[in-house]
Length: 232
Image 1 (cartoon, rainbow, N blue to C red):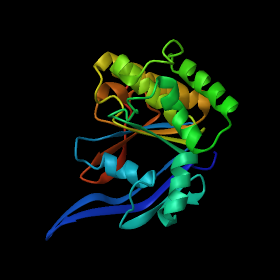
Image 2: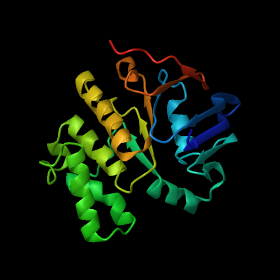
Image 3: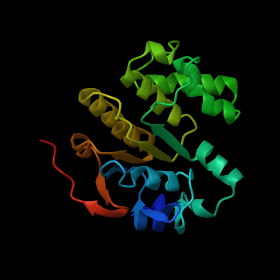
Image 4: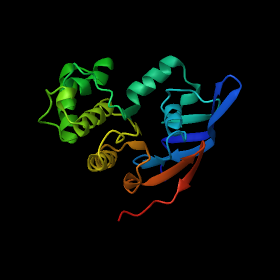
């Protein structure tokens, strides 16, 4: 078996508001391997987003550690975390996060501009990624000219711009109808296979769980592996 790309070990996160404490993560441990699509399932407020934020270096835990691609995320400096998020981890959010004044192609190209990728190489990869997500005919359209599903496809293409090894998607189908949501999840699964990335996808939609290789159930900050439901 290959080495895990992601190692989460004893992760704990507590939010405090005055005397009140909310334990968001309780000693969470698991591993994710290259080319694996893992669905993280749980109701709203169960800790899914908190967990993904710790893994992607957007927040720090109170205890425990996260290792991504052999690097201990929880021990990184802010500069190292910026490099991690630029080069190793791609993010897809429920709200799409596209820049309204930029075209689809320009949005996809933003991470490569930040990484100072040469123009010719950048433009070639932008075209390839938009074709990969089925938007080769929409390169010049701005987000307001695209449907919700198309905007999420642009966001997915952008997340792959710098060839990340880990894709983190937080409720990527939350603003989409069920049919479009399933198409987006199928696209993520296809990209995991074709690009060889590892994907962690938080969702509360049971119809999408069957597209995952494994399912992690999170409830009150506790994570355990759940049985994978069969597609009907």
